[in-house]
Length: 156
Image (tube, rainbow, N blue to C red; front, side, top):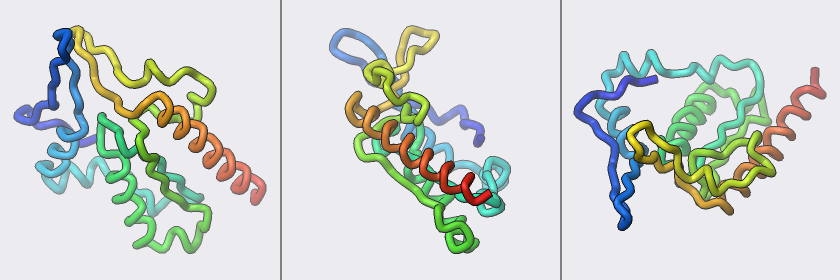
């Protein structure tokens, strides 16, 4: 991970009822923009060295970090290395309207509670998305991951 600089703080919102929520997406992006190249290099996963198909899943309304943007960066590394030619099942998906909590493991579970995460100080972190978009993305990610695993394991 890239350590957060102390001068970068999350976007904080106060609702009409006095509740406080934080969205760290913009903050994470700013941390990455300000980070020295050595910190970026230390945090970088060398995806191009993976010797199997790679599936990147991101969410357009991820309010924790810019998951689609970060998966695009990793996808570009795969493409530059010629990985998709060796592994034609490589793929990237950015789910429209979905938030941070999208996972094949959440298929069938209620998604309403995944919009916010409680903090120790009583505030909440915004995770983004809507229950409908998060559920749809979780289902779609389960299908994509299952297809990838099935196709890959059949080759073995």
